[in-house]
Length: 116
Length: 110
Image (cartoon, rainbow over all chains, first blue to last red; front, side, top):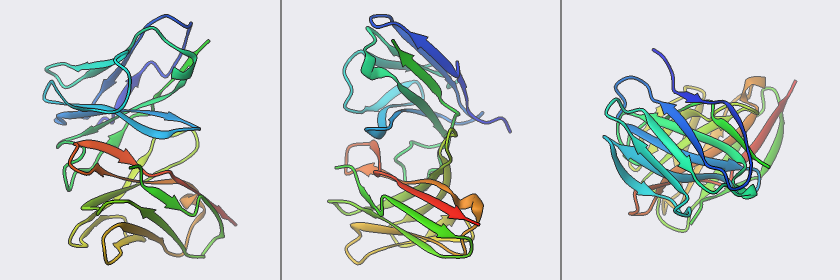
């Protein structure tokens, strides 16, 4: 079956702009979670959407937002970009909630965002 | 609250064994382990459940310590393909937020 697809793979944006990243989960999976990966901070949880509802959110400013559509595809938006937002953004797809015991999460290849 | 992994980095020869630890300030009820190769997405390796049950890889195993505040990942007879960064992942106690450990870079040499 098809894996998790993230688009675009690479993005270069200017400070102050906004960006939208997309994640298409594995068919039948209801949860999409998003993560930011940087060399300094490692992998950090952004938020999780489950059946179109935001289930939880990590410690990121309100500039980071997301949504999930009825087909489980999810988008993540970052407004007023800052240099520090440069990172690899990963999404993961799972049938159950990502924190549920016994859940296996499948990651997409990520979107590499560079803010200049 | 981020779990701390040790060692931070390790270099092995093919065929050698390795242990990676994931330590938390609170009890762990389930732990996921992932491996991420350079430039690639993390790949799920296994789940360790609170009763000690494991689901996943056949050459990799894991355990909890007595207080369940540490999980250890055991890599047996390492292969070149084991190289990468290993992360543990778990729920931040009672928050529904998923957190990853600090990561362990492992390199296997021929």
